[in-house]
Amino acid sequence: MKKSLVPALLIGALSFSLAGCGGTKNTPVDTTTAAGSSTAAENKQEAVEITNVSYDPTRELYVSYNELFASYWKDKTGQEVDIVQSHGGSGKQALEVANGLAADVVTLALEGDIDAIADAGLIETGYTSEFELDSSPYTSTIVFLVRKGNPKNIQDWDDLLEQGVGVITPNPKTSGGARWNYLAAWYYFENQGLPEDQIVENIKKLYGNVLVLDSGARGSTTTFTENGQGDVLLAWENEAFLSLKEDPGSYEIVVPSVSILCQPTVAIVDEVVDKRGTREVAAEYLGYLYSDEAQKLEAENYYRPSNQEILNSYKYAADSNTITELPADGKWIITNVNLTDISHFGGWSETMAKHFVDGGLFDSIYEVK
Image (cartoon, rainbow, N blue to C red; front, side, top):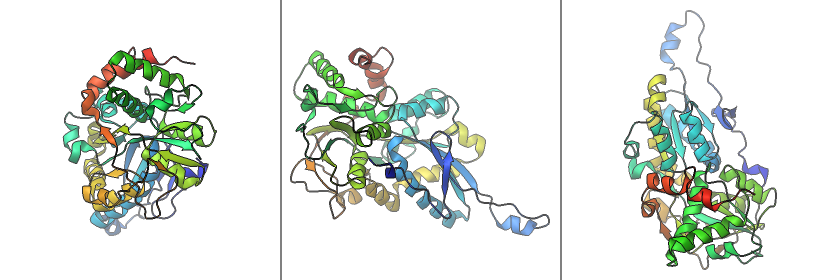
């Protein structure tokens, strides 16, 4: 992907500058008044600032959403809101927050990463019930991004085991997207009726073809698109479609027969908002992700909206499982895929304990090159 994928700085009322852990921040609004201007000060609310710690591929989405939300909040309350934005591998971001990175809200790749923050005592139990649909305002799935013409004829997960196929995927130890990739592959082989020992062998073959394990999904996209490494990138839908948008004619998306419904999860960081007095704006910031305006924006950024009516308006009637260009009508969501979800694996606590903790199955499968 060309470097233009990293969003340009917004100009105007909601302009951003680099801040924090690879993050961006709105330009603060000057709310000071001259001495003696008490009436003016009373009529002008001081700007509020919140920090959203998110994962790699949401950069473009939240540049647009932050602008939308700031306008909504100003119209509703008369108050300016500045949003500091931080991005990185989801697991790494969760660790940063647990270790003291002050976030009012987290919008991470999976519930399991937010659990790590809750385990550190920063988020109260029951956070998945605070917002609709287990606090997952949008979803995604995992697809393959291949080079133009698909030279290695990669059509499904078993093609990734072939000798000479270079695979690019992030590290499941630091990236939430990488865990979804791993589980989607696992489910495919399980769906073939294979016993667990054979599934493990196939996953080992797949990771034997992995050329680079970046720490996050955006790093893997850069490795594949800008650095030209690998034959196939295991990618979030939005990363794959953004690659088609940024460099038309260079890549194709292959939708595998089996994948997984990825449910990015959002939560208020209770300890931080109570210290800062930002609970109201933080709750509204996450709740507004479910509004019709935000749901359409999410779909425009190639995330699957949770609003079924809006999702249906973006459904794509595909003739094949290969997409060579962005649909002209903006409809891109392919639904004829066998999607499992995390409940199939027993939920995130069980999945993390079995596969991704130190000494878990992934550590036994992947050998550092």
